Image (cartoon, rainbow, N blue to C red; front, side):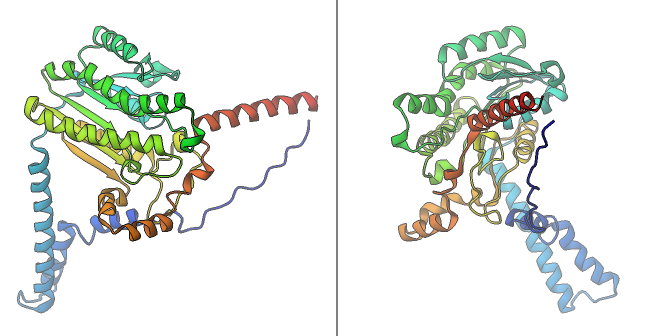
Length: 369
């Protein structure tokens, strides 16, 4: 057989995993945690230090300040989102669009393994359904007729849906002038209009569910910033965010038993964004789908209204639009947000590369023998 030579993989530097998010996470669980903060004055007291000693007073003041911040943070969450609903997974019917791969697949598998009733809607085929513990429905969510048909099948087969996770998305990754009108229609239909179709179809069922319901909307930080080669995707995600916020305001009055969760992640390490160059791995690290899935599952399990944004910069991205126009331009240039898509490959590119590699292996075997 022919010998195949490969180049050794490049090793990341030892500090590659280091990011501002990791630093903040460590600080929140140590220096800025009430329990740890109160340990310090207790340690001073164990050393027979008097209560009026300066180090003791400073440590008590710091611990009191941190505790107050945590209390106010909890109060702020309760004021903004209200009381959670009770969730019993044995009674939940979870509908996930775009659940055959990526983030949606992770969430579907977790709930499937935990014994919840899960329905996955996707145009892509899904293998090993029994092992995943989910029910797959082939559906193009950009087609309102297919969504309506599948909704009837889900209610007949599984029961009344109680959780809707709108996750389906596509990324053409082309400049506006390089896209055909058909591609633009497909992108906007999948990334934006599908949310209207699924919400309009499944909301009546969620509203009449005796256990309440939860709506999860997967948006993107690109909807706030925009980016070159993402005109269609950014426009759709901006619309999705506005749709979610407006719907949450409506449901707060008309259906207070329903909960809404808005998810605004940065760049995800999924095939959807394969090949995209990370502008700054320290300030804007790539988000792992498992981390987003954990946050979504925790919100759904807790029956909470919530806004999830990660990494750290995604929580403060709205302040970007407050900056003067000149500073915004400088920030975009430093971040490299408008050049990251130049190396974009995407899901279709990965599939094409895999097919080429497979064909190459076949040809190599034929030549070798």
